[in-house]
Image (cartoon, rainbow, N blue to C red):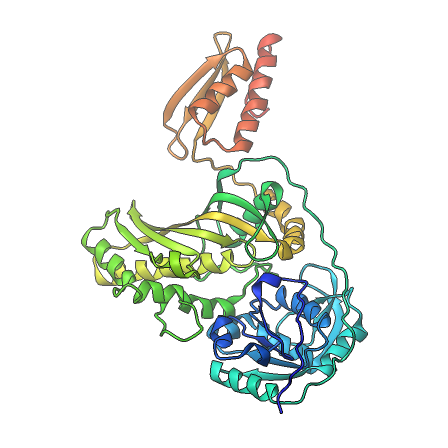
Length: 494
């Protein structure tokens, strides 16, 4: 006989991201769309259905919700997609129930309960270990490998007699720290780095320093900059992973992720598009092939464009974050520019950037193999309309900045594309000669006695001058002005 008792599931965390029922089985669908399972069930056959993307961010909140709902006695974990295998969240959740936790340090450097699993997963140390152990031993888990397999297991549990809750609801308070936000530009930001790793640290620092805190549509907050352009100039073809690796991805994850951008994928129930599917077959054309052929036929074309946005995305939701890709050949370099409408800069951008770099490399290689052109890999540029960091990674972001940002800033590179400046005193005036970088061709000359007026004039004519270069110029101009006042010879940099 099936259960008649009606239970109410109460979610403290991500309440608007769940589908609620009145049964005793919690269903975790991983990266599979939760509605794809719910539509095969009656609401009295499950307690709650929700997705789980990240083992380091999601499991902690999921466990807290389960501790609030001791009427949940069964857990079905659907681990069915390539994305699930890559992210490892469902595997890690199962390992929590199978193997438990031990006290250790999280990736953010905090004392945590670390799940005994090959996949890193953390639970707040504030949660009592006895509560975790009681939960582990009170909930029966089943893994499912497909929607039909999951539905069968859920319905099988629904046929069982109602079981009494394993305890009383228990809630452990979470500590949240609101970041200090400095004033800064709201729209339009430019960040450049040689590698994806270096650029990423600079991006995270910029968002955490001046990003606006706003509510998200997903139960929580994010810190956001609008219209952020990231330029990566010299990412090596085989990719740079720092040692020790502070990126949120490694080489094995990247190999799987690259196929999601380069390869077509079949339509599967419950699985959203992949970027590769949108590029290869979604619109009935292989857009990657189209841009290769376009550039071979017209190497300086400004219309080598790929789109991932479908006008139907306005109606049905679930629209891709990556929307458009442009390729250009300038001075024998192939650059790639990608636009994201929404970009999780902490957890997703490094993988996005490396996947796009792989696409750029693939297109360059195909052009070189099929034509007489021998192109170099130019820069990778991403434009993120909403460049944000979710509140559940704020502490990780702070830790990253603390450990990496100052070291990156110390790697001084004196090159400034805006040029160089020679300062001297002639005819009782400060004379500043502006030259091009590299060749040293003279392109401008400024003179006067007032250093403040001079620096303002230079910055007005050359607004793209590096901030540290402008600061250096200001110091040198003041030194020259002081020498002029006391009639002493001035030598730049002395």
